[in-house]
Each structure stands twice: as C-alpha cells, then as structure tokens.
Image (tube, rainbow, N blue to C red; front, side):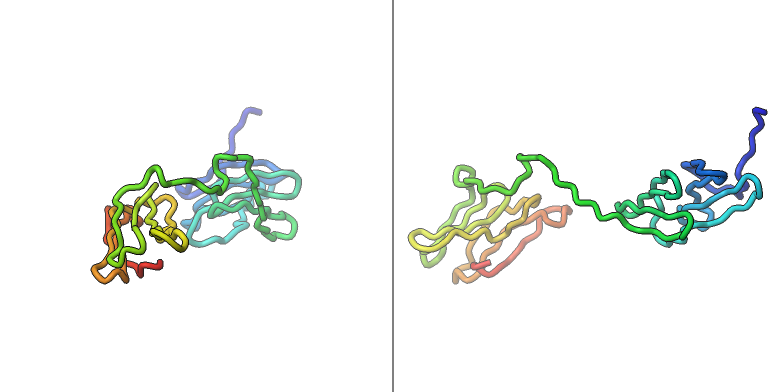
Length: 183
C-alpha cells in the first residue's frame, strides 16, 4: 500500500531496525542507555529486551531466533525465546609475523650510555627501553620493559643503588622515574 508507520517514540533515538518473524527489533535510548527493544506491528506493543546501565549496545543483527549485538567491545548472542544473553568467547589468531614476539639486537641503537659508580655495569637507552649491561660478568637487564613508551636519558645515582630516567608513560609529557638498579 506504500503506507508508512512510524515506531511510537518520544524524541528518542531508534536505530538499526531489523525484522525477524512478525517482530521488529531495534536499538533505542528510551531509558537513556542504548538497549535492545522490540515492536510488534500487529499489537503495537513495545518491549525492552535488555536493561544495560552505563554503556550502550553499539550494533545489532539477527538471524532465526537470535540477535547478535556488540557492547563494551564484546559480541553477545541474545536468544529471543529464553531472553538470555551469552557473551561469545572469541580467540583470534592472526598470521602477522611482524607482530610476533622476537629477540631483537638493540646494541646498534643505544644512546645515553654511562658507567655505574662502581664500574661494573653500564646503563643505556635503546628503542625506548632502559637497559643495564655488565661490563664483564652477568646478564643484561631490561629495566623498563615498556613497549609503546619512550624511556629516555637514564642515569645512575651517586651510590649506584638507584637509577633514574624520563618516561612518557602517562602520555601527558615526560615524568621522572626512579627505580632500584636491579629493576
């Protein structure tokens, strides 16, 4: 008939409608948080299916007697008959060799090198991390182990029991960090 019928609303945001069987399912912020609602065109009945507080449902799809939705970065399945939600446990294994954990020789990119007060270890920065390295015996230590953070300009304390460096860990600028020399 080319007639149009609007879902009953009071200036709410109603988005992502989908039709399953005789019912329309959609996202709405009628309770101030985006939740899943249903509308039956035959009875004109509107029902709220989820009652989340805080964060919104962001995406909705449906098939058969199930609705799939995303909330807080997780995918969920909502069984229309039982009105039960189940969070999906998804494990994605990517084929990204560039992202694999690997050993990397950072000796060619070192800077800010200085000798400890007792002369047994050197401290340096390389690729945003702070390392101490023995001059003769022992293991190298990655003091900061801070992927994604720029740690710069490490120095020894006068006694050699502490080290200090600058870090942009909080992303608001550089802050002075102090640690025991063994990490």
